[in-house]
Length: 143
Figure (cartoon, rainbow, N blue to C red):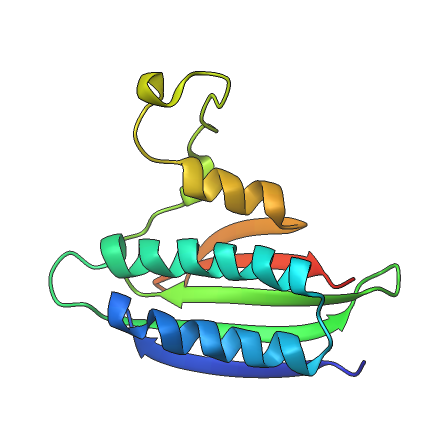
C-alpha cells in the first residue's frame, strides 16, 4: 500500500458525527480493513469526536479537522493514523489517570472510561498542543 492521506474539516458539533464516521469508514473499506479492526476504530473515532464536540469549545462551536493516513510501520505492516485537531480549550485527555475498572460501576468516578477504551483498543495514542491546536492521534495496525 502506498501512503495515502485525506483530510476533513467539520463543525465540532454532534450533528457532524455521521459525516466523520462515513469519511473514516470509506478509507478503511478502500484499504480492506477487517470488520473487527474497523469497529474498534469506529468506537475510538466516535469517542474522540464526541468529546471534541462536547467539551473543546466553551461558547460557539469551532471546527474539528480530521486527517487520516495509511502507511507502513517499521515492521512493514499497514497501519492507519487518524489525527483530530481543534482550536478549543487546551486539554490532554491522556494525562488523566486510567479509571479503576475493577470497581463496580456505581463506585467509579464519572468520566475517563471512553478515553481508557481508546487507549486500550488502539496501538498508539498520543496528544500534543502545537500552534494553538489540540492534536490527538490514534494509530492502528490493519490486519
